[in-house]
Amino acid sequence: MDSVGRRYGAAQPWALRDVSVRVPAGTFVAVMGATGSGKSTLLHCAAGLDRPTGGEVTLAGRNITRMREAALTRLRRDRVGFVFQSYNLLSELTVRQNVLLPSRLGGRRVSGADLDTVFESVGLAGKAGQRVGELSGGQQQRVAVARALVTRPAVVFADEPTGALDPTTGGRVLGLLRDAVDELGVTVVMVTHDPVAARVSDRLLLLRDGLLVADTPTPDAATIAARLAAVSGAAMVAS
Ligand SMILES: Nc1ncnc2c1ncn2[C@@H]1O[C@H](COP(=O)(O)OP(=O)(O)OP(=O)(O)O)[C@@H](O)[C@H]1O
Image 1 (spheres, protein in one colour):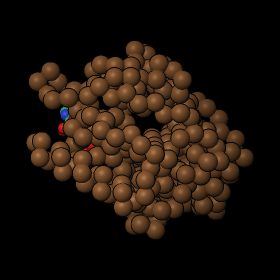
Image 2 (cartoon, rainbow, N blue to C red; image 1 turned 30 degrees about the vertical axis):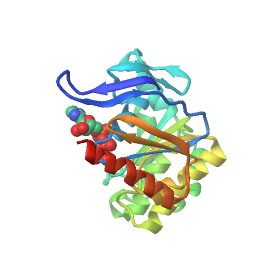
Image 3 (cartoon, helix red, strand yellow; image 1 turned 90 degrees about the horizontal axis):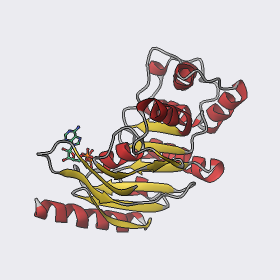
């Protein structure tokens, strides 16, 4: 992102202000900050889900700033995976159908071998035929991770992927994202409120009132919590 700004209306304050950040391939980045600091806005602008008001965005080597919607949709489908807090799965469909749905909609074939590999790696082997509605929250998030990874994306964007999970289950999901970085060279950009979850990342971005106020190698969880409290406190004082 080069000098990216976003506001949701001329009379609105800037949700993101002049953010410049480069994430090399194969890096795991955590994005943190107080509620309303612009984390989701940053993620959406970086992922091509939202258009910045100003600045330039390059995603998986392509400048998407003025890319037409159809090309952007193709780029997202082919090179990007998404994992959300709410899983965004179709509960009446099976695990396999959910994982294959985005590729099918895009007219792409996923080989049985690739599907088996991804099910194996996220611990869903043997569950492919089960209806998603019958699975636990942790299992559903694994399905979402499998769906994000099955197309072998360059980048996975995750918005609070462990927000609805208990710490143990959340830890497993974070482990899957970490493995995707270490073993497949995927780039992960993850928004989280949880310093323990952020600890799995290589690099920490901290936002305050839409400004990028820190960009550092990820420290230990206690230091993350202290930095988060410092920027959140400052945001509260400022408002
Ligand atoms: N669609 C929208 N229309 C208007 N304002 C918006 C919209 N989306 C976000 N905002 C505003 O932009 C600012 C940043 O919001 P954003 O959702 O990016 O913050 P966040 O750090 O992700 O917050 P949270 O931790 O609560 O999810 C907030 O002031 C929010 O009210």
